[in-house]
Image 1 (cartoon, rainbow, N blue to C red):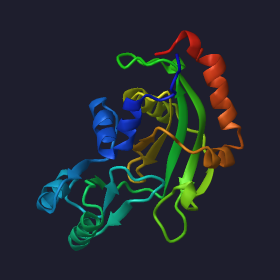
Image 2 (cartoon, one colour):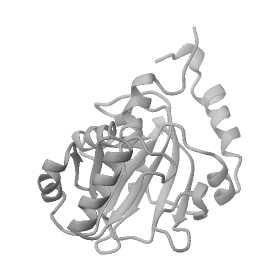
Image 3 (cartoon, rainbow, N blue to C red):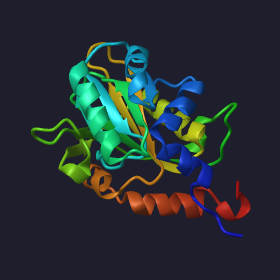
Image 4 (cartoon, one colour):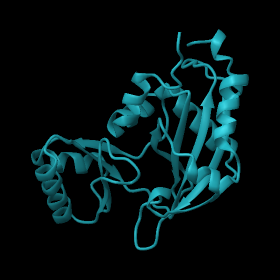
Amino acid sequence: RYFCVNSLESIEICESKYLTSEVLEADGLPVPRYALITSEDNLDQALEAVGGNFPVVLKLLSGTQGIGVSIVDSYASLKSVYQTIAKLAPENEILIQEKIDSDYDLRIQIIIKKFDPINPKKDNCVLLGSMKREAVEKDFRTNYSLGGKVSGYEISEEIKDIACRAANAVGCHWCGVDIMIDSKDGKPYILEVNSSPGLEGIETATEKDVAGMMIEAIEQQLKWKGNLT
């Protein structure tokens, strides 16, 4: 028998930003208001679903490393950006999200030992590392792969709990949970869950051997040989 750190189902959930938002919302977790744009005909309906105000965020459902994410600040731009994406990638549906007001986000990498969707226990969640990501100059995206600035960040128990619950909800044993804290009211929102988060940025930010910690968690703490669930 072989163990896969993340199941195909969990990977597929994380691959679709819309499905991720649905799963997290169903589990009572905080996510920005969102809607799926399936055609130009439902632009108005989708915009209304996220509050009807600009700016808003448009995302390709399967974009990675910040690619396929746009901030739109007017209805004319919304229509134009959507038409462009629809022309270049007609097979792609688009996620629209309300924009959370913040200059940075948090990437939190964790390990879930054993899933318990009904009553997840805190000691089942191992925090590998957390970092603050700030946008690259003249851009809004915070991804390390795009040049975003990263630094170590000590998260609160509330944020750790949200990240652990998010991983448990999507079914990932190992993942990176991206959380943004609204600068207006201090409320945290889960932006995405990444089933294959990079290690370079978080190891740079935390100055820790996160890869080694992950391997140790798998070999020692999780005891996969006796617990292949």
